[in-house]
Length: 190
Ligand SMILES: [Fe+2]
Ligand SMILES: [Fe+2]
Image 1 (tube, rainbow, N blue to C red):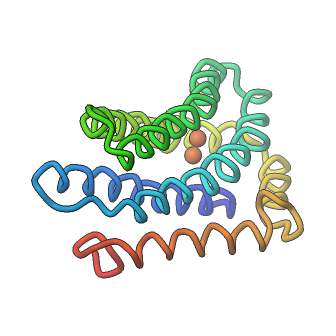
Image 2 (cartoon, helix red, strand yellow; image 1 turned 45 degrees about the horizontal axis):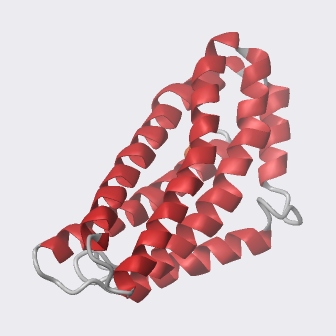
């Protein structure tokens, strides 16, 4: 498999894990456990930095851009996914705002937060499924060797702010902060 596809799939697995953790924490809270607000903030920090600043732009700029040129059948689903790349950060901003209201003890904030988190999990999961189930196989069938060489080279460029060493380090640090802070069974041992 192409190096860039391995990176994208690994990033999806990490994101999936963090979004599931978020949802599990909120569901546990409904059943009586205390909501760890700092951990919530760390999770949002991770999603914002890693997914919205690094992962989605990487997909748009290289993989999706090439696939648009090579396979017209992909255009509709790529439009949809790029719309989600714009709407998911807005959904995240709404969750962050509701978390602030929840911290301030605003009436109704808790129920709204739970709804927003469940909705975010649903949209983000479907988004990943569309990419892995439809777009990545399409890319594997439609892109040329030269395309992959270009995409892989971009992903391997250590100076690049989206793919480079610093970006990877930042994402790793945030990811480890989240899994370290997560309670059993969701944390490192989970
Ligand atoms: Fe995406
Ligand atoms: Fe993705």
